[in-house]
Image: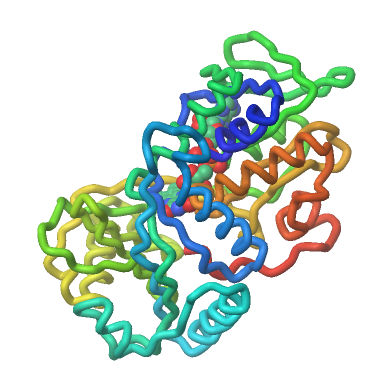
Length: 368
Ligand SMILES: Cc1cc2nc3c(=O)[nH]c(=O)nc-3n(C[C@H](O)[C@H](O)[C@H](O)COP(=O)(O)OP(=O)(O)OC[C@H]3O[C@@H](n4cnc5c(N)ncnc54)[C@H](O)[C@@H]3O)c2cc1C
């Protein structure tokens, strides 16, 4: 998704683009994400990009000429706190969003209880809510729309795995698994968690690691149980009743040493946590599990832009679980870095050199 958005932004500005993907358009983590879209973020740079991207999704068909609308549904996101320090962190996020004109607010346990039937109000201290956050009903539509638009503007898409990158004269030589090579003046690395592996072939180390995440889905349920997407921040638990009737639940807590990580054990854990926090979930079973990875950085912030000493090489990874909701804006920023040949329009908190430069900013607290 990150690569396709970048390709769309570049090709419509007349840049000749070749997209190489080892599997195909919309694979990787893009294929499994459920389409959560929100502007409730602690870092103002993330908030700014998320707001730009949400506006783009509102008008996706008009802006890209795509045949399918991703259908952004504003069901709202509620973040629930059970620890005083978490409640204060949510309050600070709400204050910063309100300062930027967003209608986010704090809610008492009772107000949350009215919004979420069956909520265990005695286990929480309150939370934050932004009614304009939501999710994409068709989370596969954006990548298809960007790909179609990029191809219409002249981009080429090839299914080919890049095994190694080499600097030869003034160009980047991409060694493909097929044995062929492609030489280009500029290259964008948007390979999700595999971006680190590709850079390692140049002897460059980036602080990017893979963290597993699991989502459980129920079969479709007729009665609506919960309308907003609810994140129990201290419990590392998220739940959403999707438009197709299925309930999505995810337990994102770090695994203890020696924890039972079998699918059956994780299913029991997610069901137990769900029914403890929201009584109506005790009737829900979760037969389907989907597993993926987040591409994670030490400050949970993106890695965007050029790397010093590697002219024409631009990074677009480190999405930390929010690449879908940010993609339209991230693609613009990355395309500008490619065209400008520098990071002047990349937020400082997202530049790859920030760790070396000591400029790493606010750690993003709102990753779930
Ligand atoms: C469980 C889960 C839930 C998530 N939920 C959300 C959510 O609700 N909202 C949200 O915004 N985000 C969510 N995310 C994150 C989101 O899925 C990603 O950030 C987003 O899809 C952007 O991904 P990407 O394009 O950067 O990487 P990917 O989608 O992983 O794409 C990387 C691409 O690079 C290709 N590739 C890799 N190596 C090579 C190589 N050597 N040569 C050629 N091609 C290569 C792969 O085939 C793949 O197509 C979630 C992620 C997970 C795991």
